[in-house]
Length: 249
Image (cartoon, rainbow, N blue to C red; front, side, top):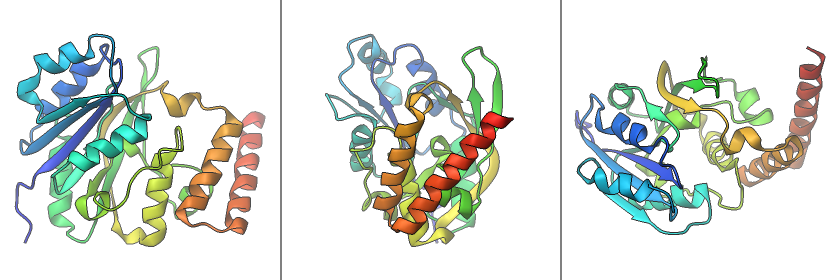
């Protein structure tokens, strides 16, 4: 039987994130669920990030500040330091809804065979407007279109995060490879929760990647996740048709 208040790890990766880091920290420390291990991985910031971290030591379980090999290397460092039964990642531009972790824990207790829990997110545009991005649970879209699940809402069980790492050679789509790799092994481990649990500011790495680079990285991610040449070729054709259709609208 699972404990009713399992330890949950939350990782924040930051580099020169003084603008929004305090909001991120507060969103974790103010959770309605309290048994949280909070870990911050700083990439050697030169702004006021370290001052903010030091001013919030009472809210942080562990933190390190050192140069890294990008976002996914930092995430791997956070995973290595984690002790929770589930681990979530919320980056320094983003923040959780107040009951996000409580929602995840309730699902975890009620679905003991699931290993990855994910939900919907609120996308914050540069002008301040927002819209909800619901996860698309279609196996076809995940395999052949793109990362259609919301990574900033994911909480991953220790059975997975202790053995699987993010690919640091991909600059922006390693979360897609990670998710797809797990999905192709056993798609039954995913549990979708139709609720908004995180807020995501648009304009990050994934939003700035050029189309051709995106197509190339998607192909590398699919290859590394175990998809064959025919499946990957179909995915490229499908993506091209999708982009063409968008231009016609």
